[in-house]
Each structure stands twice: as C-alpha cells, then as structure tokens.
Amino acid sequence: MDATGPTGRLPRRVHAGYALGSLVTGAFGTVPGLLLLPYLTDTLGVAAGVAALLVLLPKAWDVLVNPVAGRISDRTRSRWGARRPYLLLGGLALAVLFAGIFAAPFGAGPAAGAYVAVAFLATATAFAFFQVPYVAMPAELTGDYAERTRLMSWRIAVLALAILVSGAVAPAVVTAGGEGVAGHRWMGLFVAALIVAGAVGAFLGTRAAPTGTVGESEPSLRAQLAVAGRNRPFRALLACFVVQSAGVATVLAGVSYFADQVLRDPETGPTLLFACFVGPALLVMPLWTRVGARVGKLAALVAASLIFAAGALALVAAPVLPAVGVYLLVALIGVGYAGQQVFALAMLPDCIAYDTARTGRRQAGVFTGLWTAGETFGLALGPGLYGLVLQVSGYVSSSTGVAATQSAPARLGVLLGFTVLPGLLVGAAVLLLRPYDLTASRLAAATPTRPADHGVVVGEESR
Image (cartoon, rainbow, N blue to C red; front, side):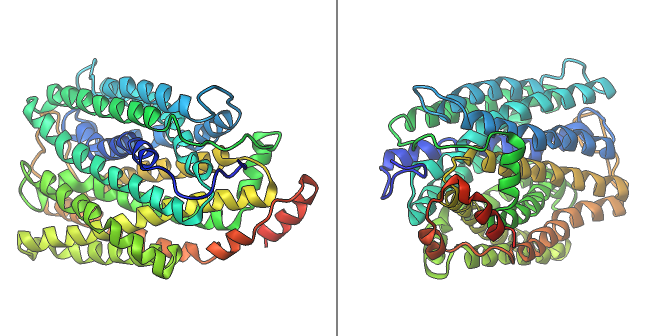
C-alpha cells in the first residue's frame, strides 16, 4: 500500500462511515453561521457591528491552528491510524464546547458577548482537530481519481442532510424551548447530540478502512507550508473555495433576517428557506456526479458556481415576487451549492495526491489544515460581512429575543446581504481558478521523485 492509499473501489460501509463525519462538519458549519449572529443581536442585545467581529475573530484563529492540527495528525502514530483518534476525541470535545456557546451564564449585555467570543474560540479549536484529520482521510483512503469523487458524493449527500436537519430543526428547537436564552440553550444541546452521533459514527465506520502508509514529511511546519504554497492547483482551488465559502456563509447568516424582514414569516420562513436550499442537493447529487464525469471536475465546478450566482442575484427581486417564486430561486441556489461543494471537495484530494506522487512525501494534514483554515475563515467572514452590512444599513439590535422594528434602509441591507453579496462572491471567485490545470491524465502521469529532485518539482509548480 503506497502513500496515496489503495486503488480501486472502497466498500460501501467505508463510504457510509466516512460520510457520517459530515454530521459534525455540517452542524458546526451551519448552526453558528445561521443562529449566532441573530442570537447576539436579537437575544443578547449586542450591536450588529460588534456582533460581526465577535463571530469573525474566533474563527480567524483557525488560520493559525488548523495547519498545526494538520501537522500533528501527520505525525500521529497509533493503533487507530493517524487520523481516526481525532475523529473521536476532537468530535466529543467539540460537542461539549458547542453546547457551552449558548449556555449564557452572564445573561445579556457586553459580558455575555465576551463569553460567547471566548467559548466560540475554544469550540473552533476543537473543530480544527476534528475537521483537519477528517478532510485529510480521502487522499489516503484511495488513490483512484474517480473513486474520490464517489467518496465525496457520499460525504456531500450526508452533509446536505446534516445542513437540512441542523439548519431547519435548530431554529425550531429555539422556538419550542421558549425563544430567547432558554430556547438557545436547548438548541445547543440538540446540536451537541448531533455532533456526538457524527463523530462516533465516523470513528466506528472507518475502523476497517485502509489508511495508507506513513511517508516522509518535510522537517518543519514552515517547510511544509512552503511546499503547499508552491502547489499551483492547490493555491488556485483554495483561493476560490475561501471566497465561495464566504458567499455561502452570507446566505446562512441572512436566513433568519431575510425570513423576518423580507418574507415577513419569522415562524416558518427559516425552515422553508433551508428546505429549499438544501433539499435540491439531495436530489441532484447523482446528476452532478454524471456531469463531472462528462465534462470534468473543473468545468462542473464553474458551472455550479455560476448557477448559484445567477439564482442569488435574481433573488434581489424577492420583495415583488410571490412566495413560490422566492422559494424556487432559493432551490436554484441550492442546486448550484450542491455542485460547488462536491467538486471543490473532490478536487482537493487530487491536489494532495499529486503532491504526494511528485514529492514522495506524506503531507495531507498540512494541505487539509490550510484548506480547513481557509474554509473556516470564509464561513466566519460571511456572517462578519453580513453583520457589517446590517450595521451600515442601520439595523437595530434587541435583547428581548424578538427582532426590533427595522427601517426601510435596514430591510434593504437585509435583502442585499442575502442576495447580491453572495452572488458576487461565489460568481466572481471562479476567476481565481484560471491557474488550476490538474486533470486525471496529469495526475496519472505523475511519478514519485527522490527527495533530491524536490527542487525540480518546486520549479515546475511555481511557474
């Protein structure tokens, strides 16, 4: 078994087991982006601009901690392999800390906001030690180019389900729990239980999976980061995905505000919006897989991104559209989102496998550490940008658990932040993919080199 893992198809139980980890990534990637900003502004009474910083800064910490988590997992030796211990331990720590974010021991006000920021920082750190090893695993589970797409299709299908369940049910739990602080506490426990199920399921489901062999790594984190930075396809893909993650996150951050201020349906609006956004992902995933096989992953990623952008920009007409038209446009955005996620995540293991084949060094953890740091930063940047739009447009915060009456400019800010901003971010980001040139044939032609040849590889990849 080589450093890039075995060839051929993986058992279905490995597909399913690995995909269960998306319950963790889906829940943590969705619920804070969906509920944390309105929790701060409409329950704890934190000003929108300050709330935006409180959401952004703890996640920005991941830019530093994720590569470290990747390097640590690269060097881990255990009877469970290099990655699996972190699925269990990181996942369980994440569950406990997530529930703590919404514990609200200081009630409302500045102290409450500071507590959320510290708790969110600790939770983001635990998430890094789950997510980085988890994302690193596909490059080691299989060396087959097409099999990685199939593996990602399973993962994205479960991810879509996790987003649907956590995003649709979490607001309902808040409502059933009495709104305000009490409702958010119950929601925190619900999401924590979902995270535990995903972490334990992924740990047990991958126990018989191949993990590859431990290869030679660069001697320092700085050297590993330098190698990753010289990987041109990886650089292009990462830059695009970070910007697009910010665009997706603005949609998540704006759901509650959009349902309340534009649709005038704060009770059922968020759930319907989430169902329309994520539901299509479950239906069109097999179609996207066939599209990718026909036109290639890169072209399919561009097409999916443009579909997302077109739907988001068209949604700016929501105030004059019938409700069914609004939900259909949100469904179109969901179709684009499904393809954008599956192909970006299928292209990442290709970049890692190419680097391993060319250099003979096992550095999946560092690549995925940078990837998840960028993704997490993008997912935090989205709510931060949305919060700044609310602040500029004059959004009024509340400490009652119910949104205050807003002015016309504030409602316009809610609309533009939910439509135009994500449309521009996701659509324009495809321009960053121009340097990406990794194809199946190029990956197949890559051959391992001796460490002495590493300078030649660097020269080739940095051109």
